[in-house]
Amino acid sequence: MFEILKESFSPISADKLVKEIGVNKTTVYRDLSLFLKKDFIEEADFGDGIKRYEIKGSKHHHHLICVQCKSVQDISFDENLEKEENNIKKYRNFQVLRHDLEFFGYCKNCTK
Image (cartoon, rainbow, N blue to C red; front, side, top):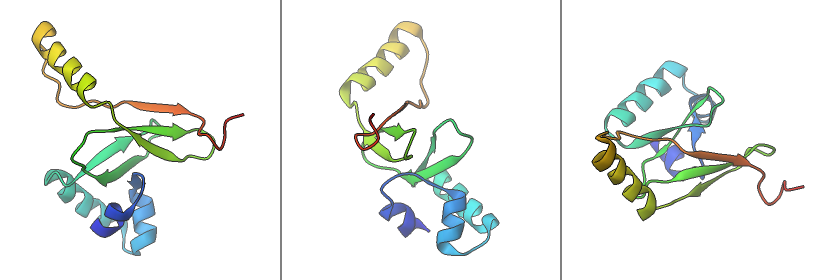
């Protein structure tokens, strides 16, 4: 399962992993839970009620999601977002544990 996540170009759902591997859902969810606990993977939420998973990379990133073909592209903001989180901590006395930021629209193939 880890290899499938590693080779995937975009976050993958547990249901898709079940189909790819051919094992039951309980096994997949148990392994995903372990991978999350060990900080090997991260969860992506595209607002549709389906959790998706991907290997945790060295760089934090967000996603561009096409509402038509459902393609997913990674996008990074690097320094600016990190500076903003530091400002939140300094000026608002709020410690950010995590954040989600996804962009929805049309990819270049679906633009009308």
